[in-house]
Length: 227
Image (cartoon, rainbow, N blue to C red):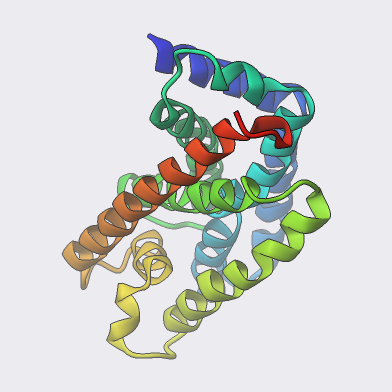
């Protein structure tokens, strides 16, 4: 019940500050953009779009969300409430992952892609992955400019190898990269589906453990003062 209330609260918070509006604009923009591509390129373009935005949007949104929570002292209230750190993280992951999956499905339909269940599942997993990365980064920053600079190395590491792989560059060892496993599933490549799932699950568990640690530390020092 507590987790459910947190998720509903997060969805209302994200709607209030225009995150869903941004998602809606992105859907319309990408669908229009896909109509320009030749049919032979449309599916690949849709794959890259889904990977780089709906799946990865959590990383970019988390900076703004956590900064807003800090400025409104939402974190101060949560830190002294019975809410568990894991519940706080899961609420963010589920609320952002749900809308990301819906956006991805809309783009996939426009791009003529198939295997919608796996694609939606992969997008949700990818959103969870990037949301936790964004949450880890946002616990250390105090301004949006700091967040943008801090995410640059992660963007390079997370985006370049998978996109290179999907266009035929790189070796199979890149499948150990979570982004590569993710983009393969989005693209409907089931050659290494079991490896993809195991790799993603492993990275999600590791990130969850690390995210719990850094968020606990953030809760103990809300407002810049050690409790």
